[in-house]
Picture (cartoon, rainbow, N blue to C red):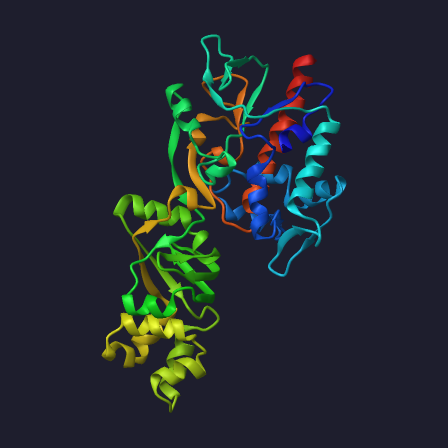
Length: 386
């Protein structure tokens, strides 16, 4: 949609072939959580949220989070910055209204739509084949086929095998921004299932993610764990488990905690609750993990509060993930997202093997790859013409 919005419609005849019967089904899924379009943090920090690092820098420089908001306003969608820095349409504007404004903008640019069309491969002449015995030959083809989560929206990842057969390098899909499996103590989970862990940080491989998480029967989910998805999946792939380290009191140093524990006249549990302000869920978790002797040792206890090891043994299924990693290998495309093995055919958006946390970063990057490629194709036509 963003590619089509920014392509020069006097140069190109643009047709979007959509798998579903309506446009932007997956775009609307984002609306379930309040329709977080992007994030307002400064661009230098914004770009650090993605992995692999620097891969998306140029597209975000070209179409930044600020540019996204300006463009939304230009088509009639004013936005506001929430308390967390996330950007939303102004209150009262529903997700479907945002989509309809984008669709109206595309129609005004003479963009055509063909619905219920599933890409099934290439024929011997190199034309695109679709599920309705339709062949299409184009000067330029741009694939934006999505990842492998939210199958109900059409994003099932089935296209991966088609590209494999064509000899294009792909990476198997993995769940990202998803729940991760933890084998909780039975008594602990019976008492604490559904409880939040607020204002924590979780670390793995020298990367730290601050935020919140929720304890579930399956394990742990929430933005404090989502942002570590690439690192956790790497460890799960190589070791069949991952050990993350939770800091339940990020504002306090280890020495602060030891000092409070050592100088308290109350028993340890009361001190944790009243002086250190640990929630009952965290106290329960520490108690089922440490021996009585360790719990009463102030130095050991303080270290566990600041650096609690949590073993992760699996991830949620692909279709339960907010997003996925994997897809077209970044080595299979050039700097302008053109497939190295097929001239004038490009891949953008989530079907490429990059990763981002929740918070507006996913939609922003997908939009930015579309806008960047539109700019490249507009310039390419002008250069070729000259």
